Length: 127
Image (tube, rainbow, N blue to C red; front, top):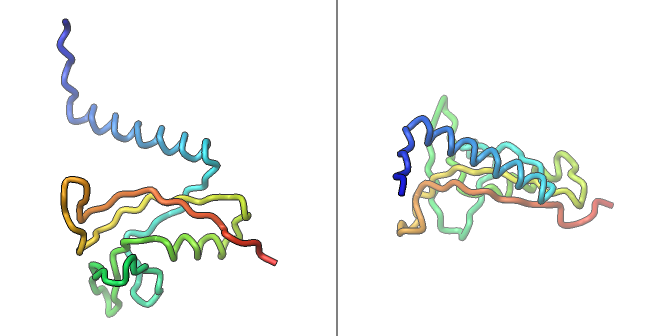
């Protein structure tokens, strides 16, 4: 039996990138989705941060007298994009979110650092 060659670091990076790109292309095509940009952080006064359960404390920082928060849920942002850009009722959007959830309970399945795909569509007609 032939022993498999170990991948180099560069080969691993390339494989991860290609796998992610292939997944997204198939994901978009099969589910008829449009990918939209997901911010890593938002200004605190935009009200786009979502209190998942109402008890989260988001990671925040200040820059030039403004306060910013690391996004940990994109529910409000996705709905804002659907309405602002008049997505058709049948069309889904999706985002790839990267976030830090400061209060997450860390275990073998959960981390404070989150990468997730999330989708949303218009839930009612615009009359």
